[in-house]
Image 1 (tube, rainbow, N blue to C red):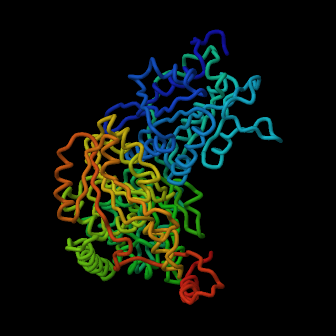
Image 2 (image 1 turned 135 degrees about the horizontal axis):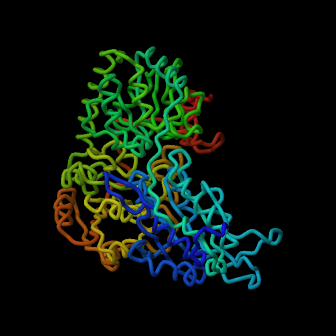
Image 3 (image 1 turned 135 degrees about the vertical axis):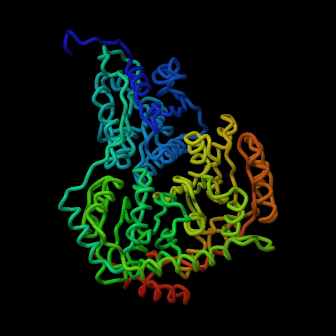
Length: 618
C-alpha cells in the first residue's frame, strides 16, 4: 500500500460491515442504502467477529434476527425480487449446519438471477484448533469445508483466509451483485479467526458508492437480424420474462405490443410486468398457461422472448412451438440465455433492446386479423377464468375459488405471493395483477417453504403495499417459523393457508402418470395415528391473528378484517385436493415408466410418447 494513502485499522469483519453500510442506490430520484439490512443468526463462528462488527452500525445497517437460516435467506431473496434487483440484503451465519441451511436459498437466488450476499462463518484459517465445533473434515483435502457446497449455487465464491483478501473480494462481490447479466448469489466464507484479525484498510474502500443499473445496448447486426425476422412474421408473439420487470421495462413492452399489434404471453417470473387489463396481455403461457396464450403460441411463426430463460414450464418442455417454421428471437442481457435453442440473439437490456427494435421496425405491424384473434381468445379466457373463480357452496372449494375470493376482497393492486405446489399453476393463470411486482412467485426453483419468509421480505421491501401470502399445508409445514419473526417486526402480511391435507399437486401428477395414490396425501401415507394439526392455534402461538373460515364467502369477510389488523394475519380454509382449472394448460415432460404391470401406467406411457413426439430437440 502506498505511503500516502490514508488507512483505517479495522478487523476484517468491521471492514465488511462498514463497506456494506456505504453502498448506495438511487430509486425514483432518492438515494437509498443499497443493502436493506443484514439477516443474522449468530453462533460461535460469527457472533464474536461479525456480530461485534454489526453492533455499532445497527442503525446505518440494520440487523434482523430470524428463526431459521434458510428462511432468512429466502426473505432476503424476496426483498431483492420485490425491489427489481435495485436493493438487496446480506445474511450471516455460524459455520456448519447454520451455513448449510442457506444453500437451498442460494439456489433460489441463483436460478432466479437475484442478488444475495451470503457471509457464513468458516473454519480457522490457522488450522490450529482443528477440528473445531461443526467442522466436517475431508480425509483427502485439508482445504475443504462445508461451505464448498455453496460453489455450485454461487455466481462468485471466495474464502477469506487473510484480512486483506476481503478488499478485492468485496469489490468483486459488488460487481456480480449489481451486474444485469451475472447477477446472482455471492458467498464470502469468512474464516472465524480472520474475522477478528486487524488490518490497515485504505479509506477509499469505505467511500460512499452509488450503484446505477447498467443498461447494455445491442449489437446493430443482432438488431437487424431480429427486425428481419419480425418483418416476415404473420403470427408473432412476445414472451415476457422476469427480465422485463428487472429492467423496469413494463411500460416499454406495453407500448411496443400495442403499437405493433403483437400479443404478449407471460412467464411466471414476468407476470405483472404488463397490467392484466392490457388488451394484448394474453396471460400465462405453457404448462400453466391460459387458453388465450397457448392457442397463439402453437401457431406462432416468430417468438420474441424478452428477458426469459425459457424453462420447461414456459415452453411445455419445448413442445408448445408447434409451427415447424417458428423462428426464435431472444432478447436478454445474458448471452447464455440469448443463445439458447439456436435463437437469434439480441444481447441487451430489455428496455433498451425493445426501443432499438422498435426504432428499426419502421411502420411494420402484425396483421390485424392476428391481433383480433388474440383479443377474441382473451375474451373467451376471461369468461372461463371467471367461471373457475366464482364462489360456490362446495364443502371444500378449489384453489381457483380461493384465488377469486382473495382478489374480490383485496383487489388487483395487492402483491400476491406463492412458491410451490398446485397454487402456482392456478395463480399463473388466474391472478390478475395490475401493478409491477403485484405477482410474486418463486417458481424458478419452486422451493417449498419460501412463502412466509418471502412475504416478510416483500413487505420489508414494499412497506406501503398490501402483501397476501397463499400457501398450502404441505409447504407451510416445511418452513413456517418466520411467522414469529413477522410478528416480532410487526410486519403486516396476510397468510391464507389452503389445507388439502397433503401434497395435493404431486398427488394429481402421480395420478396423471398412472400412479396409485401413494404417500402424498396424508390419508395415503403410512401412519399409526391420523394426524390432526390445529393450524390456527399454531399460527396464533407464533403471534399472528388467526382464524379458520368454512367458505369462500367467509374468507372474503375474514380478508377484510385482516386488512384492519396490525401485524401478521393468518386465515385457514379447507380445500379440495383434486380440482384444478380445466381451461388452459399444456403438456409437460414427466417421464412415465416404459414397463409396468399396471394398466393405468401403460395408458399414461402411451400418452407420454405422443406428447414427447412434439418436442423440439434442437
